View 1 (tube, one colour):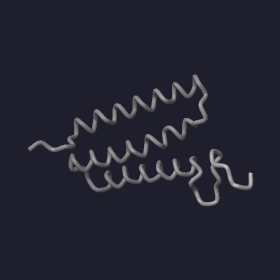
View 2 (cartoon, helix red, strand yellow):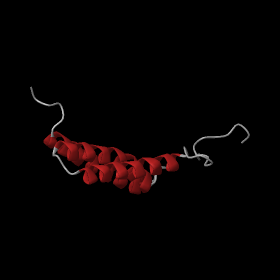
View 3 (cartoon, helix red, strand yellow):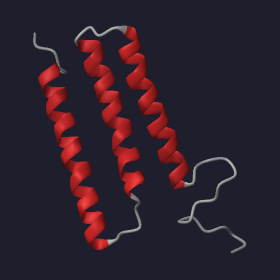
Amino acid sequence: MTPLVSVPVLDGILVLVALECALLIIVRTKLRPPVSTVGIVAALGAGAALMAAVRAALVGAAWPVLAGWLGVSLVAHLTDLYLRGWWPGRASASVRRADD
């Protein structure tokens, strides 16, 4: 039986995520949508770092490598949450309060 997740499959997905990130940044610079470059990198980087952690586990990397990728993912996730306004004490620009 073949595994559902393999290193070449993860490598291909990581390449696609990198291409998606580059394309979104290019579109952002041309059209000026209300999304920051840091927001794009944080949102996609969190998932990419998790995939890199799975890849590291599949190839038998040392635990500090795996922990490092998980740490990168944590920082990216927290950055994404902060930028979306889901941080305690920070109101999102896209969410209106009832008193506004």
